[in-house]
Every structure is written in structure tokens, then in C-alpha cells.
Length: 128
Image (cartoon, rainbow, N blue to C red):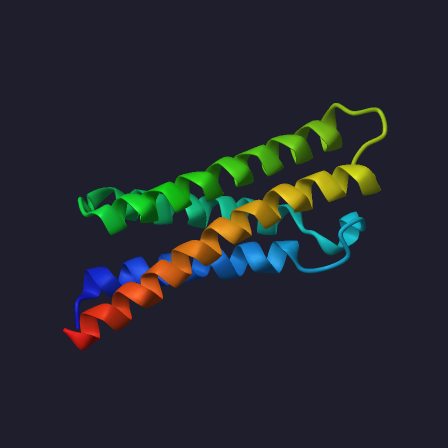
């Protein structure tokens, strides 16, 4: 068993599951979406991105692209949350929560693509 592949797979899956946990719930209810879970999703996604930098294959480039998309979406979601919670006169209302969760859902889609790539790569390696 390759420990590097285990760590890589762990962070790819953890990024997807933490992101899923944040997105899960009523799209407009701020009480169902925890800011710390969004922060955790962003941090884990950034760690997964760093782990993808070493792979020089075409599949590695696609893995990196999916991570960069997820990172961008989560940074945008955190920025919108921060602005709405701290600088907006209305605070984090239903429409703001919808914007944040929608951005995080985009990151979730990118993470899902990354997980599919990881599984397909694993299946193709086991057949060789």
C-alpha cells in the first residue's frame, strides 16, 4: 500500500464530504450552514490542492484543475459570507445565504469530479 496515495485519496474525499456537509440543508436558512464548516471545507480543499501539485501526468493536471476550481468557488463563498456578515447593512439574509451555498455547491461539483477521477484512476490501475 502506498501511503502517499492513501493521504491523497483521504484529502480528496474529505474535501468532498466536508463541502457536502456545508451545502446540505435549506438553501435560504443561514442557521443550517455553519461558517466553521465552510472554513474547514476551504482549508481541506487547499490541502488537497497542494497534494495535487506533484503529479505531472495529464490526469494529474485535470485533478489540479478541479481543485483550483473548488478553491476558487470556496474562496468566493467565504468572501461573500464575510462581506454579508460584517459589512452589509442587512447581514446574512436568505438571499445572501443562497449565494454562499450556491458557490459552495459549485465547489462540491468540482470535488465530485475529482472523486470520480480518483476512483476511475484506481480502477484502471488495478486492472493493469
